[in-house]
Image 1: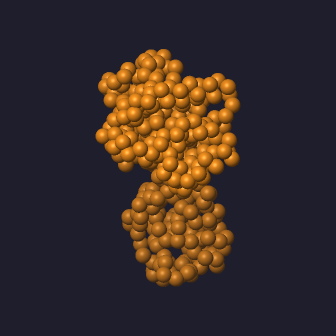
Image 2 (image 1 turned 90 degrees about the vertical axis):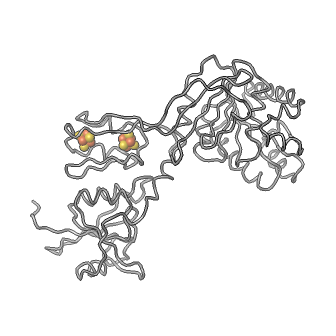
Image 3 (image 1 turned 180 degrees about the vertical axis):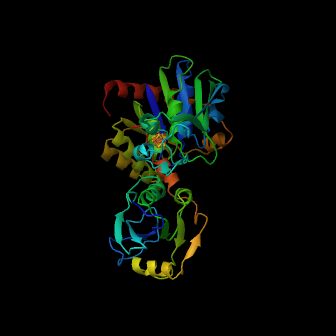
Length: 139
Length: 286
Ligand code: SF4
Ligand code: SF4
């Protein structure tokens, strides 16, 4: 059973470890490092959307929401990922991109409230058009 | 017989060739289909009187929230990730949807109905010389040309079609593939220049992947080098026609005149070309 106050934070990662590099992309990050802020428990979730031909942001958002995440830290959120996360009440933050950071460092910044909160998509979607154009008929 | 006229890039004379072929035949059983739905221009040369029109697009899901149990099955089956189910919300992203219908079929509650998301329009009518003319027009800003081309190909013609000529969009991407699918022969229009050759190779590759017989028309013959000839020889692509470079032709086309009207000798040449294509299709060989 999930407790009421339980707080889970997801950080987008390019490697399988929180000590590996932070990935500034959300939909296309290879992994998400999940941290339970109450117990300190951590796990790494593979992003099922990493190879998606379309809608990576939607699928990635769905997968972190399904894991009960309430906070996501990444580098950017497109309009669709933002819509899915916002409708789940997930709070989104972006980490600074001026220097390479590890997942653990990003989490530390989150704890210290050193991250910028986002309340709107950070960029226009970029995957829809090629994806739609890539369609070759009803197979 | 279905012939597609294609070209690796715009401005090579693709539409000139396609419309001339149709004009040279000019019978009521001939159909011209402008598949260049982003920039159709066949009408300039064929002058159709449009009397048919149909809005087309894809069927996108609409969820009836009073029936939806938020089971998430629709989101799972959608290979384009166009649906997310978040708690008690089911979100559809129409701009990701390809209208495949999987979610509608999979929903255990029959909570999904479909509505037409209009992407463009089809228009049809007889041309000045009495051939069936049809074209698709993609709405401005709409990224997906393929569904409109697919609907254009499916649009029932008003009469029996013996010869169908499709003017493909330029390039070698998916709309070109869709235009070629189901055809019997592809006529590749190119120029004898390094750029022409580069683009020819790309579109020839698509034709090969589709396994269709093809032939080449060299337009503005004489302006470049022999590389296109060498390539065609090497690949076994027959050069079926050469249209020599001629300023008079360029000027006439700029004024919206079909090639066969600018140089009447082309009437015969295009009739012969059509016979040649027909015999190649019947022969089954390249
Ligand atoms: S499959 Fe049907 S019932 Fe289940 S979430 Fe989707 S729309 Fe709702
Ligand atoms: S119709 Fe197909 S592409 Fe569109 S939402 Fe349903 S499953 Fe996804």
